[in-house]
Image (cartoon, rainbow, N blue to C red; front, side, top):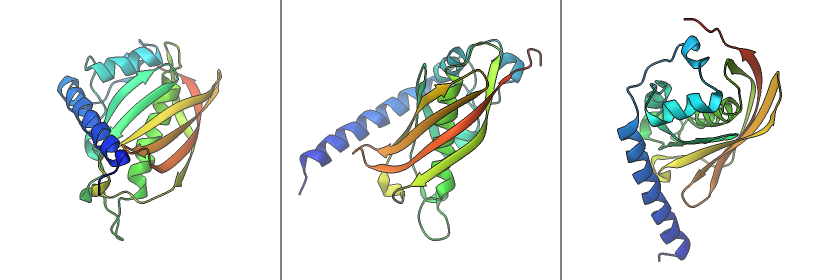
Length: 184
């Protein structure tokens, strides 16, 4: 029996898959951006340049099967689809996959608040797993939001949810803010 919730989730899942296809077409080939290049942009400008395809997106997205979806000041969204190649020995998606997706969204949420010439590094990441991910889960979105953005330290939190709104994991981070080198 199909419920309204299932119908809504299927519609959201189709919308997410269409958005992911649009993102894939626009992204530049995966590569690393040099710190001197990053320093030329504010954090949000840098993320928007990556998300729009102006700058290369990081290879970790291809390795871990996730994409950047949206960036605004203090909020970043990534989407991934768990697959069998992400399995741990007990037959579910490895928690490190969810942790990497969450680390990316919370760290980039912090980056989105930084001025030109500043970057961050993760000092602490805490992840709480709520339910197992499998390939049948379908696409999930990790949304990170900044809680505090100071001059030396920033904190953010993130949630990993499926198209039906079910929570799979949530995380918090503490990041150190630092000067980026201006030349490569």
